[in-house]
Length: 208
Ligand SMILES: CC(C)(COP(=O)(O)OP(=O)(O)OC[C@H]1O[C@@H](n2cnc3c(N)ncnc32)[C@H](O)[C@@H]1OP(=O)(O)O)[C@@H](O)C(=O)NCCC(=O)NCCS
Image (cartoon, rainbow, N blue to C red):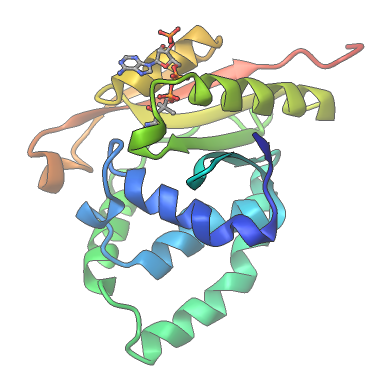
């Protein structure tokens, strides 16, 4: 396990794109890989924090996040002109499906926890072959320890009740439910409403 570098971007996008749909391929709900990378992964590697798990097979998992929401925006904005150019040049395959998801996400938002108490957020994923060996717990534990060292006061993340392994891991490391909201966002893909969870954790600031 180590801190990620820019050289890990392609591998992290690979793992993310293979896992973002309840642990399965993101192409199911978001068929535009370039736009997925821009919104879900690259801002964290460019302006946030990122750790990866690497084996002989390469990078098989990551934990990425930002300590403040503004850091995500700072990472995202420089990426948008390039994505727009790709779109205008007709090179953004799957953009219609991606737009469909984006419009649904705007229509069925789940409000996050207050940034004043929980300024940081994170994402965590392991490729399917790497799961169940303790790497998820090790990554998240290390990420939380580093965030505590940096003086982050609190973290939030979102997941769904359907994602039982993730909920179990987060609960075991002290995350609590801030919001549980039944949402139709995923209905076109899962065929039912899903319970969207916002989980939060306060961190103890060293010396605080
Ligand atoms: C959630 C995830 C990160 C867990 O990583 P992992 O390396 O498989 O988990 P670990 O082996 O470190 O196990 C840590 C804890 O996760 C939970 N867990 C892991 N696999 C589980 C399973 N199949 N069922 C229920 N709980 C499970 C348990 O609480 C486990 O603790 P325990 O071993 O003390 O019982 C991994 O399953 C994953 O990447 N899933 C797909 C992507 C994803 O859903 N990310 C989270 C998005 S919010």
